[in-house]
Image 1 (spheres, helix red, strand yellow):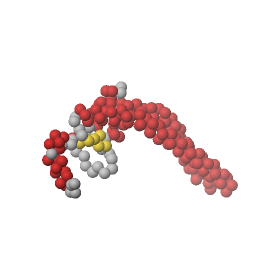
Image 2: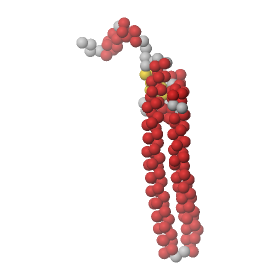
Image 3: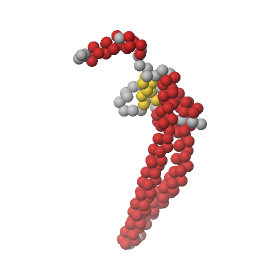
Length: 171
């Protein structure tokens, strides 16, 4: 029974089996870039834009209208009675609350749709990663943006190759 991990590693690499396997080749893929730059990712972004941009424009207009009401109130406040000021402030506060509720609902819907579309891209991306890794005889593929990775040599980056394979297979 071997008790030393160092001795076990030496024996593994000294054995014919260890030599036959050769050194592990490592590559990495920036999955965010794959999601952003692949044809599937661009189609997903367009879909999100078409679906949510009108809501964003509407929310922007409402936000601007609320700001305008606040500015008008501050300007006219000295000329108004306390009762009028209180009513205007309550009206503005209600609009702010309604706006925040709409904005939060829109944000949640956007995030849910992003996750759904992203999940649909992940499976083909993994297949493309596997294809590229096998073609380039890469033993280990890391996600380039994961915490804990402090340095990656750009020569190990397979992202562009993965995007090419995805675009070729998913047009």
